[in-house]
Length: 309
Ligand SMILES: Cc1cc2nc3c(=O)[nH]c(=O)nc-3n(C[C@H](O)[C@H](O)[C@H](O)COP(=O)(O)OP(=O)(O)OC[C@H]3O[C@@H](n4cnc5c(N)ncnc54)[C@H](O)[C@@H]3O)c2cc1C
Image 1: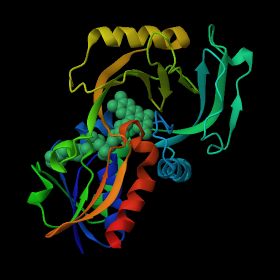
Image 2: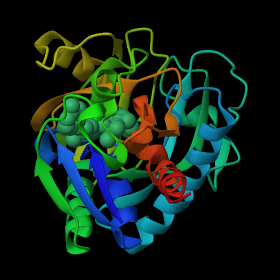
Image 3: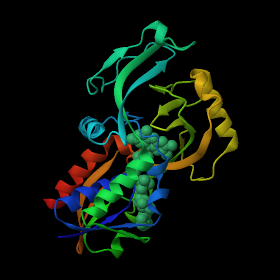
Image 4: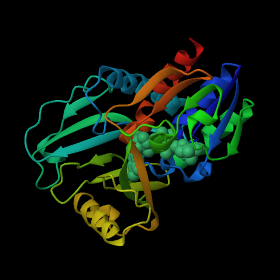
């Protein structure tokens, strides 16, 4: 069985790995170099970030957390278990996903930075996203898969069995007008020895998060719908540094490694769906917005089952 996957971000590579390891002959087409996709800009925490209210998405989050937790034991230099602290400025109900992590509890007052009145402390995993992308690529190629750098103007130009994992590119090639960019900017610093991740999304000054990975640490962030600009914004960089230093003073003097921008593939919900066309069978697997790593394995497994059916 020959399959063409469009896209070499975390979704296309994960789907490609599953297809190739199941014995199909898989080629991946990507218009950008593998190291320059949105997936390489991502922080990499498992967390339902603005996840749509959809039972399928809940199940994908749950199953992918299980899979990433196993990977944290098998590939401890790529994925690590990490305690996460999320802060609030008023009382909030527990989230629908509170039973998914092994640990979920309320923060004690002594665990809250000044100004925050409530908090959740839960177990999660953090992926070193650039290293993880290299690892997925290697796993795919060692299983015999092939990657070609080539733009696809429309899925109509391809025949046979197709996996559409084009992320934001689905706007054009599906075409799907409900897909839109959600711009995100992050700063990568040398890790000043932080142990736990911090989410301060409700910070009135702007979206704030700190994700210690291995050698580096991601400071975020931003989330701007319909903004296609891939250039870094120096004012935003300064503002992110200010916000993160206020909540965790140890990041203030850390060495800045680089600043990254990515366009999350926004969509009202993730699309994992089979479409039978006259000359082709297309399985769509795109629109993961801010949850691509957090749902990657489960959506890829679902997509592969749809193709095999
Ligand atoms: C700043 C930031 C922080 C984030 N943090 C997290 C996080 O902590 N946890 C999490 O789970 N998620 C996070 N995300 C979201 C995550 O990065 C995305 O959900 C994920 O990368 C989407 O993966 P993808 O493979 O669908 O898309 P992409 O990585 O964008 O890959 C799309 C692929 O399709 C190819 N393509 C597109 N159009 C065409 C075409 N016409 N022809 C050929 N190839 C094409 C591209 O070249 C690319 O290879 C973050 C995102 C950003 C920007």
